[in-house]
Length: 132
Image (cartoon, rainbow, N blue to C red; front, side, top):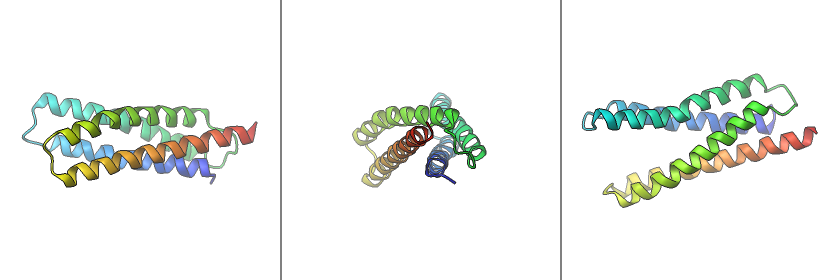
């Protein structure tokens, strides 16, 4: 299994962990309005669906030395969506009246997500250059 495949699978797995957890929390939040739950779940599905696609595309590509264009494109999409989402969410979380632990944990989730996505994209690009 190549580095690009391992990093893409790690990014997909981490993304699924973070956003499936968010769906579970949003669905179970009885204090939130129905619209708020809908927005949170829709945002999370924007991560979950491509992360599942990335995991399956990458897993199927794990023995191939050729660059996976679909996997690379999906990593790029997920990374852009991750950066934009966390760039908005982290300041909102810090400005809101959450406990400091909540703020630190969510900042860490965002930073880890961006780092894993960046490393996955870098490995995908390196894989494409090595092949051609």
